[in-house]
Length: 219
Ligand SMILES: C[S@@+](CC[C@H](N)C(=O)[O-])C[C@H]1O[C@@H](n2cnc3c(N)ncnc32)[C@H](O)[C@@H]1O
Image 1 (cartoon, rainbow, N blue to C red):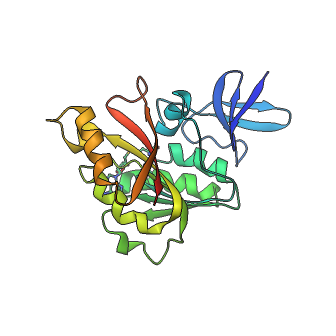
Image 2 (tube, helix red, strand yellow):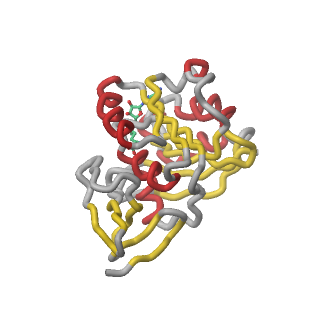
């Protein structure tokens, strides 16, 4: 077996992307687990996670670090959040905002065994609902597939430290199905330019169609 350390807490084990499991033995989405030199690694499926897809498609820098505070908008059932939870480790904090009660039920099961994940059942358009719960963050991750994606990122940017990074999974089909994806991506990034500078852009096909994964820095 061979291990390659790609970024903080992100590895390739025998060529497969993975993170070191924070809670040994616990599967979140039936992902494969492998042991290597006394540690357990969780294989990270790029078809289930846009961050995994971006890493495999050549993301140059991954900014999530051990002990970071992360605000995750659109946590769904906990797939990507579980890997982010692995990366930040037990001293980090991961606020998981999710609107759908059905998804939140599954997410709660994941949060039960991962003490760094704090579930928040809320609509990310209304930041005042979780204002008092959320500390200043190092990273915002936004993957809400909503026509209001841009506005949601702008309003939540007040939780992000200056020079903090935002990971923004832009879904063109959620924003405007009548315009070309490229037009929608450019317009979205342009609308954010008074708050963020663009650091990196990664197309995440074939794993996720009609998406752009953008890495932004708060100015
Ligand atoms: C594409 S899924 C996210 C997948 C997840 N990021 C992952 O990789 O595991 C989008 C999620 O955003 C949630 N969502 C949509 N609009 C939202 C809003 N306004 N506030 C919070 N969550 C929202 C949906 O319920 C859904 O669970």
